[in-house]
Image 1 (cartoon, rainbow, N blue to C red):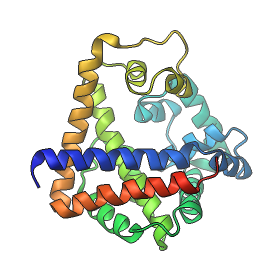
Image 2: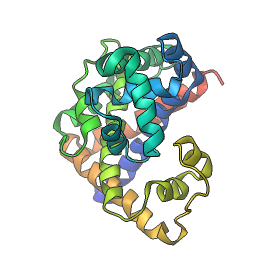
Image 3: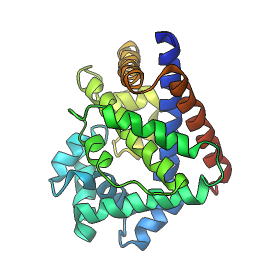
Image 4: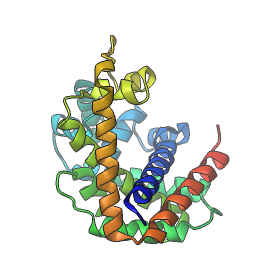
Length: 252
C-alpha cells in the first residue's frame, strides 16, 4: 500500500473510532449508568472514569492530560468524581460500562473479532511516551466476548490517537479553545467547559490543518509498523461498519 493510501485508511479508521467511542461516552444511557453507580454528576463520572487510569493524582494533572477541557471545571469534576470510588474504582466502572455498551449495541456486527485482533496488534507496538491515557488504558484487562472487546479496543486506540493529537496541538500555538472552534464549533467549545466569548482561531486554520495532518501521519506510521496494507484497510472498513451498527442500534 502506498503512503497516500495508508494515510487515507488511517484517517478513515481514526474518524470511525473517534465517533464510535464518542457515541458511548456521550450517550444518555452511559450518563444514567454513571448516576446509578453513585456519581450524582455524570460528567464527574466520565472524568474520573476516563482519567482514573492515571491514579490518585491532582485535578491539575488530569486537566493537563485531558488537554482540551477548561481546566478549572475539569479539575473540579475530577475531585468530585474520585471522591465516590477513587481513581481505580472509577476506571473499572467506566471500563465495564464500555463493555456493556458494546454488548448491547455491537452484537451481531461483522468482523468484531478482527477489529480486536488488528487493534491489539497496533496497541502492542505503539509507544506510550507522552501518552499517559493510552498507557493507562492499554494495561486494562479486555473483555473476552467480541462485542465488548471490540469497543474496548477502539477505546484504547482512540486514546492513542488523542495522545498524538494533543502532543501536536501543544507544539502548534493553537489554543484548545481555538482548536474546538476550528474543529466542531461553539457547541463543542461549550461542552468542554469553555466560557464565551470563544476565540475562533480564524487566522490559524492552516496550523490546525497541519495538526490533523501530523496526527494522521504519525498514526499511519504506527499502523504501517503493526499491520500490512490489507490489514490496515480491513481495520478502516470494519471500524466504519461498527460505527454504522452503533448508529443504527443505539436508542435516540
